[in-house]
Length: 372
Ligand code: NAD
Ligand code: LMR
Image (cartoon, rainbow, N blue to C red; front, side, top):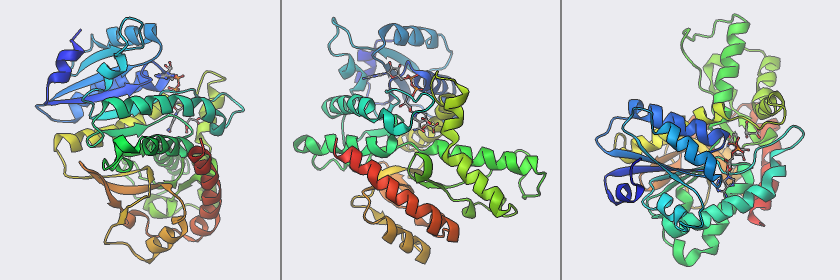
């Protein structure tokens, strides 16, 4: 197995860290990175995958197994250890991207909010290590653990608490709560509906519609914007309402199907991998910027020049929130501006029915996180 300390010294290494890598999401996501990233990004730079979990036996086994996969992406295992007190330091030093799926998942009958206390403790500790060991002017932090709506504020507060260290880093522009799974669900549920109803939607057989989703990541804080997806144009209002409800509560379907053995892992690994690819491309210089929808801090953010009246109206409604899931343009220096063009028109139902409920519940979730 490669020596992590040697790899870390290499300046031309893109280092991807997964914290909580032995879990359901962590393992499947790490597998996608180790086995597929090599094929989807082109680079002469070395890519290293550093996997950390508190479950020592599990992470050692996972990394031993993955080290037999024949791609040039190197891999190392990290876990808390009496002998090696520096395991998180070794893992996080020189990281370019940190993905965090560490935390407990839901069981049937639970809401994401029920996970708050335990997972807030876990992500707070991990944030302290990120502050200690990462270059905060360079790092991108991608949070997976739930409840996203409250944990992103918890992480931001850890940075504020350590302001003497994090000052001038613009870290709020480098922190992203991953909400991609909602959009992934919107796309496949819409495609299935179109296929089942044998509708003509203008989509080719192998074409997937893209459904923008904004707001937050739980229940009615999730706003799927089907009005901005032309493939949904031929659906009735009832069909759209069913789709909205299914996207909002899609997580529950998986929790019930797994019968107490956790929540979505494979579809989430897929969704976070889609997002990760964009960040790796950005870091490798394959693109100058990327557009991504995620749950972000709205502090000090510009709006793009193409903002239309619908976008202005939406902005005025979300103005008193500190966080929102919204499309944004990201450069190597972090979030540059909100990309309103994508969502500058919400239809009557989205604006008047979905948005007010979202804002009310999101506000509560954010306050919970900010008061932790
Ligand atoms: P899991 O229980 O299978 O895995 C979690 C892993 O985290 C375990 O291996 C555990 O040992 C590890 N862990 C716990 N505390 C840790 C710590 N302090 N440091 C490092 N590792 C630690 O759970 P999962 O199914 O992989 O889900 C993980 C989280 O992701 C849950 O909170 C779940 O709700 C959330 N999730 C989010 C989305 C999303 O769309 N954002 C989707 C699905 C699941
Ligand atoms: C999901 O949307 O599937 C995740 O947030 C996991 C969950 O608890 O539903």
